Amino acid sequence: MIIRPRRLRRTQALRDMVRETALSVKDLIYPMFVRCGTGVCDPIPSMPGQFHYSVDTIAEEMESIRDSGIPAVLLFGLPDRKDATGSRSCAADGVVQQAVAAIKRRTPDLTVITDVCLCEYTDHGHCGVLKDGNVDNDATVEILARQAVTHADAGVDLVAPSDMMDGRVAAIRRSLDNAGYQDIGILSYAVKYASAFYGPFREAAECAPQFGDRSAYQMDPGNAREGVKEALLDVEEGADMIMVKPALPYLDVIRRVREVSLLPVAAYNVSGEYAMIKAAEERCWIDGPRVMMETLLSIKRAGADLIITYFAREAAAILGRG
Ligand code: PBG
Image (cartoon, rainbow, N blue to C red; front, side):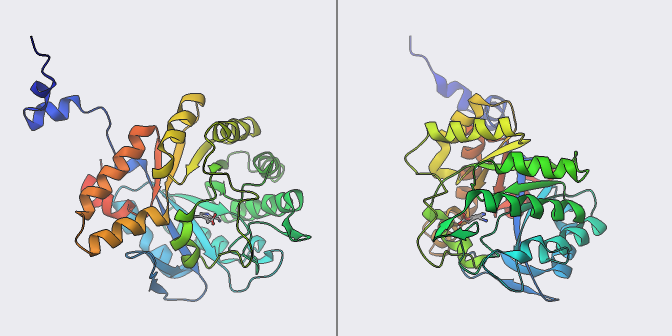
């Protein structure tokens, strides 16, 4: 007798019945960029289909995002000026703080998450403040903890620290609690690799390091066991959700993190993963929408509960409101 797995592939109805992984619009988080000015909606050349918005235009976008069924956005800010300590990252009238408040006024039911980091705000482009040419961990953590509170003041739902300093989740948790924000959560970029896949983002966020690279704080791409260690540390420090980033080159790490933690796991389908698909689609080398859906499904299958992706709007249009 032959075992015939093909029996269950015979019709679409059968295939639907036995499909193990389902992707839903509710799994998606849409990353967006906000800068100073008004009326801004400028295409980002390295990320076709993505834009720089100003506070007014980003708030206007939110109704259509919410109506498409996408539950959450992740905001990145490009400040009016940069300095050595990234001081504009903690300003009550900073661009992200203003955007959070504007979005929450207009679409309070949309979940707003903010990236907490210094690289967009420092003139040297590193994710922390420098001491003798190195990123000073503990001095940086103090600033990040203050930054998180200013986001909470503006009305954010979750803060997402992406800097990879040691001990920052505990410090942010403590300062949120001390400021009375016990209910504001932390989505930690727990397992973040020093990756070349961030290239298009660094152009979009104007945050490429002016010297050296980020290998002294982001993780070595060869290390999966260390990824598990980083994830468990952030759970211990009080993270509410943990993230693996990038997604596609690290599906094995997503799976391992999923298996060791009971928290929701997010994966960041980063700018380079997005740009590669867009570029190949432009050349008619691949069927863009199909490759997009297969990519997102693979990240879900690997174990991610949530996917942060620039494809969110395009995927939502295919998935429906769910
Ligand atoms: C740092 C940050 C980066 C990304 C998100 N947060 C860049 C970096 O670490 O260099 C990359 C996101 C992407 O590539 O889509 N604040």
